Length: 158
Image 1: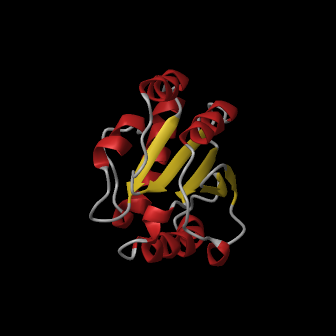
Image 2 (image 1 turned 45 degrees about the horizontal axis):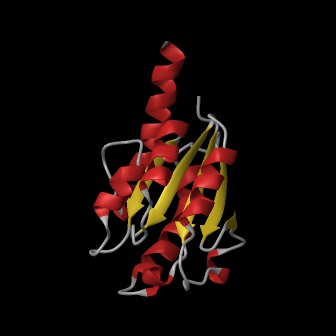
Image 3 (image 1 turned 90 degrees about the vertical axis):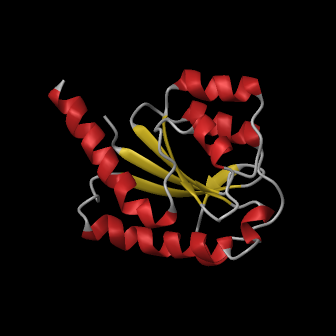
């Protein structure tokens, strides 16, 4: 059963291109109110920034998009999360995971939902790590939380 949702934001330099940074910051400002208004407050939610490593995000105002993401840090992050944690990755998918990293992610069987940002988003890359067959777009963000609720409901019935 999922009790925690970590929102992991890709803070690489590619997000700074073509207005993607504005979309990401909009989502980060929208999420807390959406969570509260739609009754998703029962989930412990943490916002994290992913660049060279993954660390807590203090505020969207302090978020800077530069450099590259470290794929190994994403794998390590997933290894440290529990089965009760779902990850919502907000990214343009402009990173490469080698086969070993992809296999590690699949073997962990973590719940990963991806929000693709930008018209140039690498959907194929995001599909390789998503545990759900649909890659969501920013306008779908409320649907991710509804899906987590539905998954929890079906687990409770089993």
